[in-house]
Length: 430
Image 1 (cartoon, rainbow, N blue to C red):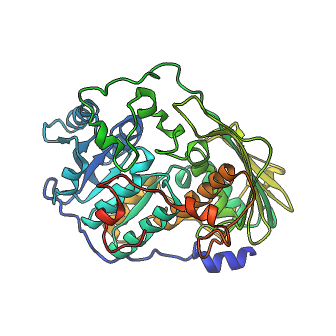
Image 2 (spheres, rainbow, N blue to C red):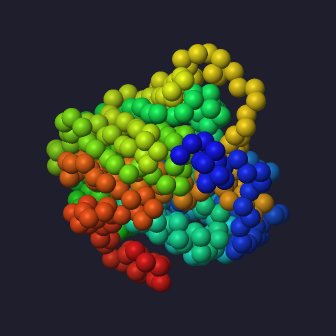
């Protein structure tokens, strides 16, 4: 697929934005027409980044409720909101369903562990709430379900990932899509390995202010371990896909754009070398791996563990960023001196501004559920290839592993009652 075909198929350079059906308007009952926001998940990411950004935009929105299964974290978030607004109005909840049942709330920000991303997003959309949610999904099939629910309800959905809005990755994609590298041949990605905790590793009773059963939700019932519950849930496969989906969701989004497959994906996935998993009985995801992808247009991509970097290689040059959100270097400095651009990617100050603008202007957000699902899917098929330790073929159109029943079984997983999708969104296939 050359650049011209990519542009025609993706619609990425089309002026204007798709107008959405209006399901939930800005009720503004609390704040004179501002968009009322409910925060679901108030840990470090939910508070230090996400909540902090909404509080910077008083002309757009008002945070009216906060929620976390850890009540002390929710109270800390309430205090931050009240101190910022100089009021005592912010409501605090431990059960996210109370936020979803509040008719005064227009939109929710979901900053929970990964296994809750899609269930809460689906439940929110069915209540008419617009959704901005952290990446990634947990399985391939639930990602497809997410897209179908959002399409049917018509709410605004934004994948809450910085990369689409960070100048370094935005420019990297525009450099590639404007032909500054020639035809794209290869994407090289390295994901940084995070150290495991050395404390909080014992089985204990949950803290008294934590609703641990609700924290687990659709995941299997397992003993409480502090470090596996807070932040390091990422390295346990009932809650997340480990390093592959955690860091991969960042760099691989840019890769999907520049390869012309924002709404598609690779056709072959091959694990190379030795794959190593955490196997201490607490964590169990892959921390050492080397995945080789092949796209239909013969572009290749390598995603390996190591340090943070992304490099785009074309037949006329390359561009690279080493480290997280660092500057660009190129094979020729003139590559980065972009004056004329035939392809202009949409952008905003950050994902939150775009989300709020999308609600007000009744349009799709920049990072749509379909885009996020496709990036998550290529990472899920990578994890499945690692687990089966063999090359896999993938049909991105049908979203199936052709003639491979063993891999097909891993597209979804059983959910603990009462959180199955048959219960929370009857009428949709999963």
